[in-house]
Image (cartoon, rainbow, N blue to C red):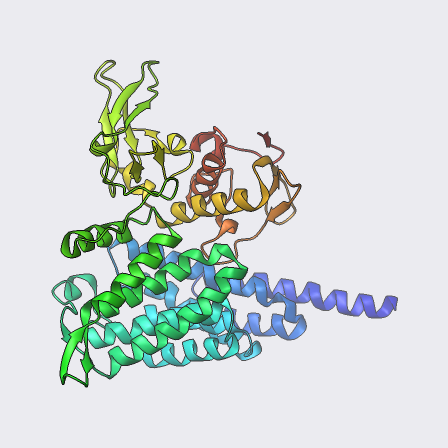
Length: 456
C-alpha cells in the first residue's frame, strides 16, 4: 500500500509540475509546448483538469477586458491572442472530458466571441444535449437562440459601429428567427425548472425572457389565417411582466412597461408591498439622506431618475456630492423596493460611481444577498480565512446555515466575492455586505486581511 501511495503520489506531483511549466510557457506565448505539457499533466493525473480550466478562464477574462476597453461587442475586437489561447486550452480539455457540458458551453462562448459560428453552434448543441435539464443546457440554448436571432437580423459577427445602423423592427419571419424562437422557448422551459431549484439562476432566466421579448417585439411572424406577417406584441408584453415579477427593480422591464402603459392605457407597475400603482399618489416621497457634514438633505423621490439615479451636491455644506441609486418608489405605502437602499448611497464626485452602481455583477450580488437572507435569516457573521492556495470567505446566517466561498466558479455568482485588493471581487463583496446590512466601505473590503471577522 505504501508503494502504491508513493507511486500515485509521485504521479500527482509530476502532473502539477507539468501543469506549472505548461502554464508558464502559455503565458509567455509558447502555446504549442504549453499544450503538450498540459496534455502530459492530464495523462498523469486527470483531476488536474480543473486547474487547466481556470487558466483558460483567466485568459478569456483577459481577452474580455481588452475587448471592453475598445468598446467591443460579444464579437471581440481586441484580446484575440488571449482568445485563441483559451480556445486551444478548452479544446484540449474537450478531448479528455468530452461528456462535460460546462466544457462545451465554455468552448461555444469562445467560438462565438471569435466569430467561429459553425463551431459555436455545434458546441452549444453538445452542451445542451449533455445537460438537457440543467443550467449549462439552459445557458447554451439561450446563447444559441441569440446567435440565430443576430443572424436573422443580419448583424452576426458585426462590431458595434457596423451593427449600430441595423435593427429588427418589423422584420419578417425567416428560418433564423424561427430557430431563435424555438431554441429560446426550449431554454426557458429548462431555466424555469433550474430556477426553482437554485434561485441564483434568476439573472439567467431573466436574460432568456429578454431575448424572447426582443424576438416577439421586433419580428413579424406569419399569420397563415390572415395571410400576413404580424408582430406578437402581447406575447412580448407577457415576457416583460415575467421579468418584472422576477426583479421589480429591472430598469429595462420598468421602461418597457411604462411605454406599454402609455400605449394601452393598462396598468402594470405595482408596489409589491401594498399593491398600489406606483404612479397613483400625487405626493412625492421625501427621502432624508444623511450627509457627511451631519445635516440631512431632503430629496424628492420624483427627482430620482428610475434608471440612472441622481447625483446631488449638498447646498448647505457645498462640499459633498453623492449618488442616489435608481429605485422604484411607492408613495402610497412609503416603501422602496430596494432593501437597505441608504447603504447604496455613494459619496463621490465622479460619474464612475454611477456606472459602477449599474454594473450587472453588483445587481446580482444584491439579489443574492436578499435571496439568502429571505431563506436563512439575517447574515450574522463573516469570516475571512487564509488558505494555502487562496483566501476564502465564510458566511454564517441566523439559522446557523454556513456558506464557504472559495475559488471562482466562472459564473456570475457568489463566488465572485473576494477581499484584500482593488478590483471586481471586492466590489462584489462590498455590495453584498451592504445589502446584508453591514456598514463597511469599499476601502475597508479592499484592505481587509485574512483573519478579519465581521459580526452583525
